[in-house]
Length: 165
Picture 1 (tube, one colour):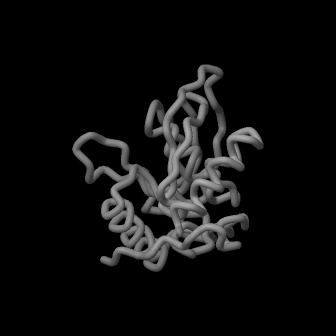
Picture 2: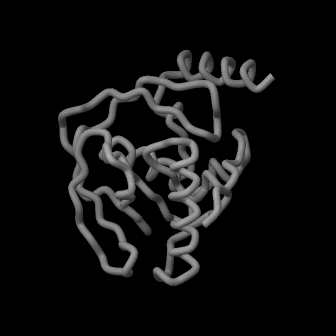
Picture 3: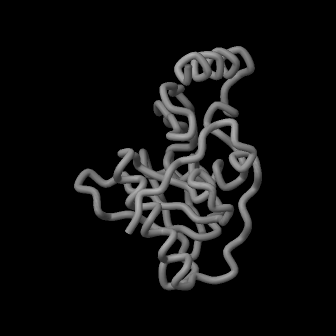
């Protein structure tokens, strides 16, 4: 397939809610394939379609140690989130050169359409849960730094602008 270019911050598409996927078809499967190639090339543990300029509610996540086990999600929705939080350094290829420690629920139950178009309810834990939540934020037009306080967010964005030259 194809490695796609991640659109740079502050592209307005990164702030827009992505559109629902009406059905999983060959076009959606081809987008997922490109997304997996792009995620592997970064390398990263997840990617949402808006990050490559495709405004559909599609995401891929692969936090497995051996790789090659990407979960394909269409229209993901968090049904349940654990009370226990987990902190992890998060970043985005749309805003290279910066990261921030973000706390999110340690585990989530997510409903989504899989590659066959079937509705699936699945539990994600640890890094996989963090990545799924990070991708859903992208689908909703949010970036990881939106979860920071104003002072930390402003510092991170200044650092990103400086890194971009």
